[in-house]
Length: 487
Ligand code: BG6
Image (cartoon, rainbow, N blue to C red; front, side, top):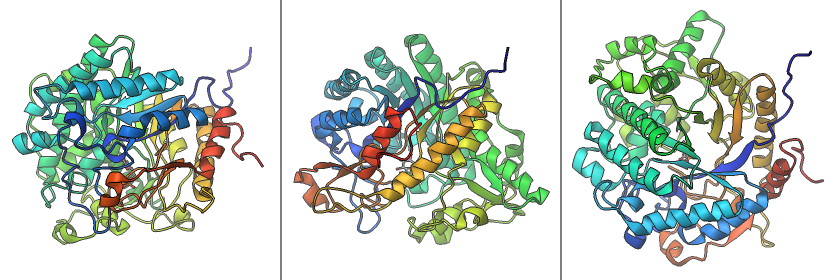
Protein backbone atom coordinates (compact mmCIF):
# COMPACT_ATOMS: atom_id res chain seq x y z
CA UNK A 1 0.00 0.00 0.00
CA UNK A 2 1.32 3.45 -0.81
CA UNK A 3 0.60 6.80 0.80
CA UNK A 4 -2.34 8.69 -0.75
CA UNK A 5 -0.91 11.41 -2.96
CA UNK A 6 -3.25 14.17 -4.12
CA UNK A 7 -2.58 15.48 -7.61
CA UNK A 8 -4.25 18.52 -9.11
CA UNK A 9 -7.67 19.95 -8.41
CA UNK A 10 -10.45 17.71 -7.06
CA UNK A 11 -12.85 16.41 -9.71
CA UNK A 12 -15.84 18.42 -8.46
CA UNK A 13 -13.88 21.61 -7.78
CA UNK A 14 -16.13 24.71 -7.76
CA UNK A 15 -14.66 27.02 -10.40
CA UNK A 16 -16.53 30.31 -10.62
CA UNK A 17 -16.31 33.98 -9.82
CA UNK A 18 -17.68 36.46 -7.37
CA UNK A 19 -19.76 39.65 -6.99
CA UNK A 20 -21.83 41.62 -4.49
CA UNK A 21 -25.34 43.00 -4.79
CA UNK A 22 -24.52 46.69 -4.27
CA UNK A 23 -21.60 46.61 -6.66
CA UNK A 24 -23.26 44.79 -9.56
CA UNK A 25 -27.06 44.94 -9.42
CA UNK A 26 -28.05 48.56 -9.97
CA UNK A 27 -31.84 48.92 -9.85
CA UNK A 28 -31.31 50.64 -6.50
CA UNK A 29 -34.91 51.84 -6.25
CA UNK A 30 -36.62 49.22 -8.41
CA UNK A 31 -39.64 47.15 -7.41
CA UNK A 32 -39.85 48.09 -3.76
CA UNK A 33 -36.19 47.91 -2.80
CA UNK A 34 -35.31 50.07 0.21
CA UNK A 35 -32.26 52.33 0.32
CA UNK A 36 -28.99 51.06 1.73
CA UNK A 37 -26.04 52.85 3.29
CA UNK A 38 -24.28 52.37 -0.05
CA UNK A 39 -27.00 54.21 -1.97
CA UNK A 40 -26.23 57.36 0.00
CA UNK A 41 -22.52 56.79 0.55
CA UNK A 42 -20.24 59.82 -0.07
CA UNK A 43 -18.28 59.14 -3.26
CA UNK A 44 -14.71 59.82 -4.23
CA UNK A 45 -14.50 62.62 -6.82
CA UNK A 46 -15.04 61.40 -10.37
CA UNK A 47 -16.43 58.00 -9.40
CA UNK A 48 -19.93 56.75 -10.14
CA UNK A 49 -22.48 55.84 -7.50
CA UNK A 50 -23.82 52.33 -6.86
CA UNK A 51 -27.28 53.25 -8.17
CA UNK A 52 -26.97 51.68 -11.62
CA UNK A 53 -23.77 49.64 -11.17
CA UNK A 54 -23.61 46.99 -13.94
CA UNK A 55 -27.37 46.64 -14.04
CA UNK A 56 -27.33 42.92 -13.36
CA UNK A 57 -30.87 43.50 -12.14
CA UNK A 58 -31.96 43.71 -15.77
CA UNK A 59 -29.14 41.63 -17.34
CA UNK A 60 -28.97 38.58 -15.06
CA UNK A 61 -30.13 36.08 -17.66
CA UNK A 62 -27.51 37.24 -20.13
CA UNK A 63 -24.81 37.38 -17.45
CA UNK A 64 -25.51 33.91 -16.13
CA UNK A 65 -25.54 32.54 -19.69
CA UNK A 66 -22.08 34.08 -20.19
CA UNK A 67 -20.86 32.53 -16.93
CA UNK A 68 -22.21 29.20 -18.17
CA UNK A 69 -20.33 29.68 -21.44
CA UNK A 70 -17.13 29.97 -19.37
CA UNK A 71 -18.12 26.70 -17.71
CA UNK A 72 -18.76 28.07 -14.22
CA UNK A 73 -19.64 25.51 -11.58
CA UNK A 74 -20.39 28.19 -8.98
CA UNK A 75 -21.37 31.84 -8.80
CA UNK A 76 -20.63 33.64 -5.57
CA UNK A 77 -23.06 36.54 -5.16
CA UNK A 78 -24.88 38.38 -2.41
CA UNK A 79 -28.47 39.22 -1.60
CA UNK A 80 -29.41 42.87 -1.09
CA UNK A 81 -31.01 42.82 2.36
CA UNK A 82 -33.09 45.90 1.47
CA UNK A 83 -34.53 44.17 -1.61
CA UNK A 84 -35.96 41.49 0.69
CA UNK A 85 -36.80 43.68 3.70
CA UNK A 86 -36.85 47.32 2.51
CA UNK A 87 -36.46 48.61 6.08
CA UNK A 88 -34.15 45.79 7.16
CA UNK A 89 -36.94 44.37 9.35
CA UNK A 90 -40.72 44.23 9.17
CA UNK A 91 -42.49 43.97 5.84
CA UNK A 92 -41.17 41.51 3.24
CA UNK A 93 -40.90 42.69 -0.38
CA UNK A 94 -42.19 39.79 -2.51
CA UNK A 95 -40.67 41.29 -5.66
CA UNK A 96 -37.23 40.92 -4.05
CA UNK A 97 -37.86 37.27 -3.22
CA UNK A 98 -39.07 36.67 -6.79
CA UNK A 99 -36.00 38.33 -8.28
CA UNK A 100 -33.55 36.07 -6.43
CA UNK A 101 -35.74 32.98 -7.05
CA UNK A 102 -35.49 33.68 -10.77
CA UNK A 103 -31.79 34.30 -10.55
CA UNK A 104 -31.20 31.02 -8.68
CA UNK A 105 -33.38 29.15 -11.20
CA UNK A 106 -31.33 30.62 -13.99
CA UNK A 107 -28.11 29.44 -12.29
CA UNK A 108 -29.46 25.92 -11.79
CA UNK A 109 -30.70 25.78 -15.37
CA UNK A 110 -27.05 26.16 -16.39
CA UNK A 111 -25.66 23.81 -13.73
CA UNK A 112 -24.18 26.68 -11.70
CA UNK A 113 -24.27 26.44 -7.91
CA UNK A 114 -25.04 29.79 -6.28
CA UNK A 115 -22.77 30.52 -3.30
CA UNK A 116 -24.75 33.18 -1.51
CA UNK A 117 -23.49 35.86 0.85
CA UNK A 118 -26.23 36.93 3.21
CA UNK A 119 -24.70 40.34 3.85
CA UNK A 120 -22.04 42.13 1.81
CA UNK A 121 -21.68 45.72 3.16
CA UNK A 122 -25.05 47.11 1.91
CA UNK A 123 -26.86 47.56 5.21
CA UNK A 124 -30.45 48.82 4.86
CA UNK A 125 -30.30 52.56 5.55
CA UNK A 126 -33.20 52.38 8.00
CA UNK A 127 -31.15 50.09 10.28
CA UNK A 128 -28.27 52.55 10.25
CA UNK A 129 -30.59 55.45 11.06
CA UNK A 130 -32.67 53.68 13.67
CA UNK A 131 -30.04 51.64 15.54
CA UNK A 132 -26.68 53.10 14.46
CA UNK A 133 -26.11 49.86 12.55
CA UNK A 134 -24.18 47.09 14.29
CA UNK A 135 -23.56 49.17 17.40
CA UNK A 136 -26.85 47.97 18.83
CA UNK A 137 -27.21 44.40 20.11
CA UNK A 138 -30.75 44.40 18.71
CA UNK A 139 -29.03 43.85 15.37
CA UNK A 140 -28.43 40.22 16.36
CA UNK A 141 -32.15 39.40 16.27
CA UNK A 142 -32.75 41.65 13.26
CA UNK A 143 -30.04 39.89 11.25
CA UNK A 144 -31.22 36.45 12.38
CA UNK A 145 -34.77 37.36 11.36
CA UNK A 146 -33.48 38.36 7.90
CA UNK A 147 -31.66 35.00 7.70
CA UNK A 148 -34.89 33.21 8.64
CA UNK A 149 -36.69 34.88 5.71
CA UNK A 150 -33.89 33.80 3.36
CA UNK A 151 -33.76 30.23 4.66
CA UNK A 152 -37.56 29.88 4.47
CA UNK A 153 -37.70 31.11 0.90
CA UNK A 154 -34.50 29.72 -0.58
CA UNK A 155 -33.74 26.54 1.34
CA UNK A 156 -34.21 24.45 -1.80
CA UNK A 157 -32.28 26.86 -4.04
CA UNK A 158 -29.08 27.52 -2.11
CA UNK A 159 -26.60 24.87 -1.05
CA UNK A 160 -23.82 27.21 0.13
CA UNK A 161 -24.49 30.19 2.38
CA UNK A 162 -21.94 32.74 3.55
CA UNK A 163 -22.87 34.70 6.65
CA UNK A 164 -21.06 37.99 6.22
CA UNK A 165 -18.53 39.43 3.80
CA UNK A 166 -15.27 40.78 5.21
CA UNK A 167 -16.61 41.67 8.62
CA UNK A 168 -12.98 41.79 9.75
CA UNK A 169 -12.00 44.47 7.22
CA UNK A 170 -14.75 46.80 8.40
CA UNK A 171 -13.35 46.50 11.90
CA UNK A 172 -9.67 46.45 10.95
CA UNK A 173 -9.89 49.59 8.82
CA UNK A 174 -12.16 51.40 11.26
CA UNK A 175 -15.47 50.95 9.37
CA UNK A 176 -15.06 54.54 8.24
CA UNK A 177 -13.93 53.54 4.80
CA UNK A 178 -16.59 50.99 3.94
CA UNK A 179 -19.69 52.35 5.56
CA UNK A 180 -18.67 55.89 4.74
CA UNK A 181 -21.39 57.32 6.94
CA UNK A 182 -20.11 59.40 9.82
CA UNK A 183 -16.92 60.82 8.32
CA UNK A 184 -15.19 59.84 11.56
CA UNK A 185 -13.23 56.79 12.67
CA UNK A 186 -14.85 54.70 15.36
CA UNK A 187 -12.93 54.01 18.56
CA UNK A 188 -11.42 50.53 19.00
CA UNK A 189 -13.91 49.97 21.81
CA UNK A 190 -16.85 50.67 19.47
CA UNK A 191 -15.38 48.59 16.70
CA UNK A 192 -14.62 45.45 18.68
CA UNK A 193 -17.95 45.57 20.45
CA UNK A 194 -19.60 45.65 17.02
CA UNK A 195 -17.39 42.75 15.96
CA UNK A 196 -18.53 40.74 18.97
CA UNK A 197 -22.19 41.49 18.20
CA UNK A 198 -21.60 40.39 14.60
CA UNK A 199 -19.87 37.20 15.75
CA UNK A 200 -22.82 36.25 17.94
CA UNK A 201 -25.24 37.12 15.11
CA UNK A 202 -23.33 34.90 12.68
CA UNK A 203 -23.17 32.04 15.17
CA UNK A 204 -26.95 32.25 15.62
CA UNK A 205 -27.44 32.30 11.85
CA UNK A 206 -25.29 29.17 11.50
CA UNK A 207 -27.37 27.39 14.16
CA UNK A 208 -30.56 28.47 12.38
CA UNK A 209 -29.34 27.35 8.97
CA UNK A 210 -28.49 23.90 10.30
CA UNK A 211 -31.97 23.69 11.79
CA UNK A 212 -33.92 25.02 8.78
CA UNK A 213 -31.81 23.90 5.83
CA UNK A 214 -30.40 20.45 6.56
CA UNK A 215 -29.23 20.12 2.96
CA UNK A 216 -27.26 23.36 2.94
CA UNK A 217 -23.83 24.29 4.25
CA UNK A 218 -22.89 27.58 5.81
CA UNK A 219 -19.67 29.38 6.68
CA UNK A 220 -18.22 32.87 7.17
CA UNK A 221 -16.44 34.92 4.47
CA UNK A 222 -13.81 37.16 6.04
CA UNK A 223 -10.79 38.57 4.23
CA UNK A 224 -7.95 36.36 5.39
CA UNK A 225 -4.36 36.67 4.40
CA UNK A 226 -1.21 35.57 6.07
CA UNK A 227 0.98 38.14 7.74
CA UNK A 228 4.60 37.66 6.70
CA UNK A 229 7.22 38.96 9.14
CA UNK A 230 9.30 41.77 7.64
CA UNK A 231 12.57 40.13 8.75
CA UNK A 232 13.64 37.03 10.67
CA UNK A 233 14.08 39.18 13.81
CA UNK A 234 11.86 37.39 16.35
CA UNK A 235 10.19 40.71 17.23
CA UNK A 236 8.92 40.93 13.65
CA UNK A 237 7.86 37.27 13.75
CA UNK A 238 5.88 37.92 16.93
CA UNK A 239 4.36 41.07 15.37
CA UNK A 240 3.22 38.99 12.38
CA UNK A 241 1.69 36.42 14.75
CA UNK A 242 -0.07 39.20 16.68
CA UNK A 243 -1.37 40.66 13.44
CA UNK A 244 -2.65 37.27 12.36
CA UNK A 245 -4.55 37.02 15.66
CA UNK A 246 -6.03 40.52 15.44
CA UNK A 247 -6.83 40.59 11.72
CA UNK A 248 -7.84 36.98 11.10
CA UNK A 249 -8.03 34.58 14.01
CA UNK A 250 -10.21 36.83 16.14
CA UNK A 251 -13.12 36.20 13.74
CA UNK A 252 -12.59 32.58 12.82
CA UNK A 253 -11.60 31.33 16.30
CA UNK A 254 -14.84 32.90 17.53
CA UNK A 255 -16.97 30.82 15.18
CA UNK A 256 -14.96 27.62 15.19
CA UNK A 257 -13.63 27.44 18.78
CA UNK A 258 -15.96 29.86 20.57
CA UNK A 259 -13.08 31.93 21.94
CA UNK A 260 -10.83 34.86 21.05
CA UNK A 261 -7.05 34.57 20.68
CA UNK A 262 -5.24 35.62 23.86
CA UNK A 263 -2.76 38.03 22.23
CA UNK A 264 -5.72 40.20 21.23
CA UNK A 265 -6.57 40.73 24.92
CA UNK A 266 -3.30 42.63 25.35
CA UNK A 267 -4.24 44.93 22.45
CA UNK A 268 -7.67 45.43 24.01
CA UNK A 269 -6.11 46.41 27.31
CA UNK A 270 -3.84 48.99 25.69
CA UNK A 271 -6.70 50.37 23.55
CA UNK A 272 -9.21 50.42 26.42
CA UNK A 273 -11.50 47.92 24.73
CA UNK A 274 -13.99 46.23 27.04
CA UNK A 275 -16.25 43.76 25.29
CA UNK A 276 -19.80 43.57 26.56
CA UNK A 277 -20.18 39.80 26.69
CA UNK A 278 -23.64 38.44 27.50
CA UNK A 279 -24.31 35.09 29.08
CA UNK A 280 -24.39 32.37 26.46
CA UNK A 281 -22.45 34.31 23.79
CA UNK A 282 -19.40 32.07 23.82
CA UNK A 283 -21.45 28.91 24.19
CA UNK A 284 -23.49 29.91 21.12
CA UNK A 285 -20.30 30.50 19.13
CA UNK A 286 -18.64 27.32 20.35
CA UNK A 287 -21.54 25.10 19.34
CA UNK A 288 -22.47 26.61 15.96
CA UNK A 289 -19.93 24.59 13.89
CA UNK A 290 -19.56 26.25 10.47
CA UNK A 291 -19.36 23.67 7.68
CA UNK A 292 -16.56 25.42 5.79
CA UNK A 293 -14.61 28.66 5.67
CA UNK A 294 -14.96 31.07 2.78
CA UNK A 295 -12.18 33.60 2.53
CA UNK A 296 -11.23 36.54 0.34
CA UNK A 297 -7.51 36.81 -0.36
CA UNK A 298 -5.89 39.48 -2.54
CA UNK A 299 -2.28 39.47 -1.33
CA UNK A 300 -0.15 39.18 1.75
CA UNK A 301 0.30 41.55 4.66
CA UNK A 302 3.85 42.13 5.77
CA UNK A 303 4.32 43.16 9.34
CA UNK A 304 7.05 44.70 11.48
CA UNK A 305 7.33 45.26 15.19
CA UNK A 306 5.71 48.43 16.52
CA UNK A 307 6.10 49.75 20.03
CA UNK A 308 3.06 51.23 21.66
CA UNK A 309 2.26 54.84 20.82
CA UNK A 310 -0.89 56.91 20.58
CA UNK A 311 -2.15 56.76 17.02
CA UNK A 312 -3.56 59.99 15.60
CA UNK A 313 -5.92 59.29 12.69
CA UNK A 314 -7.45 62.78 12.47
CA UNK A 315 -5.33 63.65 9.43
CA UNK A 316 -6.71 60.63 7.59
CA UNK A 317 -10.31 61.72 7.95
CA UNK A 318 -9.72 64.19 5.13
CA UNK A 319 -7.40 61.99 3.06
CA UNK A 320 -8.23 60.36 -0.29
CA UNK A 321 -8.89 56.73 0.60
CA UNK A 322 -7.84 55.56 -2.87
CA UNK A 323 -4.21 56.12 -1.96
CA UNK A 324 -2.57 52.85 -0.80
CA UNK A 325 -0.63 54.73 1.89
CA UNK A 326 -3.99 55.49 3.49
CA UNK A 327 -4.74 51.80 3.99
CA UNK A 328 -1.18 51.11 5.13
CA UNK A 329 -1.47 53.80 7.81
CA UNK A 330 -4.68 52.18 9.04
CA UNK A 331 -2.74 48.95 9.48
CA UNK A 332 -0.59 50.41 12.25
CA UNK A 333 -1.80 48.68 15.37
CA UNK A 334 0.18 49.93 18.37
CA UNK A 335 1.41 47.08 20.54
CA UNK A 336 0.60 44.56 17.78
CA UNK A 337 2.61 45.48 14.70
CA UNK A 338 2.52 47.68 11.60
CA UNK A 339 2.25 47.01 7.90
CA UNK A 340 5.31 47.60 5.76
CA UNK A 341 6.48 47.16 2.20
CA UNK A 342 7.36 43.58 1.27
CA UNK A 343 10.79 43.84 -0.33
CA UNK A 344 10.42 40.48 -2.06
CA UNK A 345 7.28 41.45 -3.96
CA UNK A 346 7.99 45.18 -4.32
CA UNK A 347 9.63 44.53 -7.69
CA UNK A 348 6.38 43.51 -9.35
CA UNK A 349 4.38 46.26 -7.70
CA UNK A 350 2.05 48.35 -9.89
CA UNK A 351 0.14 51.36 -8.47
CA UNK A 352 1.41 50.50 -4.97
CA UNK A 353 -0.25 47.05 -5.13
CA UNK A 354 2.26 44.25 -4.88
CA UNK A 355 1.26 40.97 -6.36
CA UNK A 356 1.85 37.79 -4.37
CA UNK A 357 0.79 34.57 -6.12
CA UNK A 358 1.63 32.55 -2.98
CA UNK A 359 -0.94 34.23 -0.71
CA UNK A 360 -3.72 31.66 -1.24
CA UNK A 361 -1.38 28.69 -1.02
CA UNK A 362 0.07 29.87 2.29
CA UNK A 363 -3.22 31.07 3.77
CA UNK A 364 -5.27 28.02 2.75
CA UNK A 365 -2.67 25.70 4.27
CA UNK A 366 -2.72 27.66 7.52
CA UNK A 367 -6.52 27.65 7.65
CA UNK A 368 -6.69 23.92 6.97
CA UNK A 369 -4.15 23.25 9.73
CA UNK A 370 -5.80 25.49 12.30
CA UNK A 371 -9.48 24.76 11.72
CA UNK A 372 -9.64 21.37 9.99
CA UNK A 373 -12.44 22.65 7.77
CA UNK A 374 -12.72 22.79 3.97
CA UNK A 375 -12.10 26.24 2.50
CA UNK A 376 -13.32 28.08 -0.58
CA UNK A 377 -11.74 31.22 -2.01
CA UNK A 378 -14.60 33.69 -2.24
CA UNK A 379 -12.50 36.55 -3.72
CA UNK A 380 -9.09 37.08 -5.26
CA UNK A 381 -7.97 39.05 -8.29
CA UNK A 382 -6.66 42.30 -9.58
CA UNK A 383 -8.55 45.42 -10.67
CA UNK A 384 -7.20 47.76 -13.33
CA UNK A 385 -8.68 49.93 -16.09
CA UNK A 386 -9.40 47.89 -19.25
CA UNK A 387 -9.66 49.19 -22.80
CA UNK A 388 -12.52 48.25 -25.11
CA UNK A 389 -11.00 48.09 -28.61
CA UNK A 390 -12.90 49.13 -31.73
CA UNK A 391 -13.41 45.46 -32.68
CA UNK A 392 -14.99 44.66 -29.29
CA UNK A 393 -11.94 42.89 -27.84
CA UNK A 394 -10.34 43.59 -24.47
CA UNK A 395 -6.73 42.54 -23.99
CA UNK A 396 -6.34 42.00 -20.24
CA UNK A 397 -3.17 39.91 -20.28
CA UNK A 398 -2.19 41.32 -16.86
CA UNK A 399 -5.27 39.64 -15.34
CA UNK A 400 -4.43 36.32 -17.00
CA UNK A 401 -0.84 36.46 -15.67
CA UNK A 402 -2.04 37.33 -12.21
CA UNK A 403 -4.62 34.56 -11.97
CA UNK A 404 -2.41 32.01 -13.71
CA UNK A 405 0.38 32.28 -11.15
CA UNK A 406 -2.10 32.24 -8.28
CA UNK A 407 -3.84 29.10 -9.60
CA UNK A 408 -0.45 27.38 -10.07
CA UNK A 409 0.38 28.00 -6.43
CA UNK A 410 -3.13 27.07 -5.31
CA UNK A 411 -2.74 23.69 -7.00
CA UNK A 412 0.54 23.09 -5.15
CA UNK A 413 -1.22 24.12 -1.94
CA UNK A 414 -3.88 21.45 -2.54
CA UNK A 415 -1.18 18.84 -3.15
CA UNK A 416 0.43 19.88 0.14
CA UNK A 417 -2.81 19.34 2.02
CA UNK A 418 -4.81 22.58 1.78
CA UNK A 419 -8.46 21.49 1.67
CA UNK A 420 -9.68 23.92 -1.01
CA UNK A 421 -12.99 23.05 -2.69
CA UNK A 422 -13.60 26.13 -4.85
CA UNK A 423 -12.19 29.28 -6.36
CA UNK A 424 -14.29 32.37 -7.09
CA UNK A 425 -12.11 35.31 -8.09
CA UNK A 426 -13.44 38.85 -8.10
CA UNK A 427 -15.32 39.20 -10.43
CA UNK A 428 -17.43 37.55 -13.11
CA UNK A 429 -18.76 40.75 -14.66
CA UNK A 430 -17.16 44.21 -14.25
CA UNK A 431 -18.67 45.99 -11.27
CA UNK A 432 -18.23 49.13 -9.22
CA UNK A 433 -15.21 49.11 -6.92
CA UNK A 434 -15.70 50.04 -3.29
CA UNK A 435 -13.68 53.26 -3.66
CA UNK A 436 -12.63 53.57 -7.28
CA UNK A 437 -15.73 53.52 -9.43
CA UNK A 438 -16.16 51.36 -12.54
CA UNK A 439 -12.79 52.39 -13.98
CA UNK A 440 -11.09 49.84 -11.76
CA UNK A 441 -12.34 46.71 -13.49
CA UNK A 442 -12.18 43.16 -12.21
CA UNK A 443 -14.42 41.08 -14.50
CA UNK A 444 -13.91 38.43 -17.16
CA UNK A 445 -16.84 40.18 -18.83
CA UNK A 446 -16.58 43.87 -19.74
CA UNK A 447 -19.54 46.20 -19.13
CA UNK A 448 -19.73 49.17 -21.46
CA UNK A 449 -20.31 52.11 -19.15
CA UNK A 450 -18.21 54.85 -17.60
CA UNK A 451 -18.32 56.90 -14.40
CA UNK A 452 -21.20 59.10 -15.59
CA UNK A 453 -24.35 58.18 -13.65
CA UNK A 454 -26.62 60.26 -15.85
CA UNK A 455 -25.54 58.25 -18.90
CA UNK A 456 -25.66 54.99 -16.94
CA UNK A 457 -29.32 55.53 -16.11
CA UNK A 458 -30.32 54.73 -19.68
CA UNK A 459 -27.15 53.06 -21.01
CA UNK A 460 -27.46 49.72 -22.76
CA UNK A 461 -24.45 48.43 -20.75
CA UNK A 462 -23.49 45.99 -23.43
CA UNK A 463 -21.38 43.01 -22.35
CA UNK A 464 -18.09 41.98 -24.06
CA UNK A 465 -15.88 38.95 -23.52
CA UNK A 466 -12.36 39.88 -22.41
CA UNK A 467 -9.28 37.80 -23.36
CA UNK A 468 -9.35 36.45 -19.81
CA UNK A 469 -12.87 35.11 -20.50
CA UNK A 470 -11.54 32.66 -23.10
CA UNK A 471 -8.49 31.85 -20.96
CA UNK A 472 -10.57 31.07 -17.84
CA UNK A 473 -12.97 28.95 -19.92
CA UNK A 474 -10.02 26.75 -20.90
CA UNK A 475 -8.79 26.59 -17.30
CA UNK A 476 -12.19 25.35 -16.16
CA UNK A 477 -12.55 22.95 -19.10
CA UNK A 478 -9.26 21.28 -18.14
CA UNK A 479 -9.92 21.46 -14.37
CA UNK A 480 -6.95 23.76 -13.89
CA UNK A 481 -4.51 21.68 -15.94
CA UNK A 482 -4.09 24.06 -18.88
CA UNK A 483 -3.16 27.50 -17.61
CA UNK A 484 -1.55 28.66 -20.82
CA UNK A 485 -4.72 28.96 -22.89
CA UNK A 486 -5.14 28.15 -26.54
CA UNK A 487 -2.16 29.21 -28.60
C1 BG6 B 1 -13.14 43.09 -1.17
C2 BG6 B 1 -14.61 43.32 -1.08
O1 BG6 B 1 -12.57 43.69 -0.10
O2 BG6 B 1 -12.42 43.64 -2.20
C3 BG6 B 1 -15.25 43.72 -2.40
O3 BG6 B 1 -15.28 42.23 -0.53
C4 BG6 B 1 -14.34 44.70 -3.12
O4 BG6 B 1 -16.51 44.23 -2.14
C5 BG6 B 1 -13.03 43.99 -3.42
O5 BG6 B 1 -14.88 45.24 -4.28
C6 BG6 B 1 -12.05 44.82 -4.22
O6 BG6 B 1 -11.75 46.03 -3.60
P1 BG6 B 1 -12.00 47.42 -4.33
O7 BG6 B 1 -11.76 48.44 -3.27
O8 BG6 B 1 -11.01 47.49 -5.42
O9 BG6 B 1 -13.38 47.42 -4.82
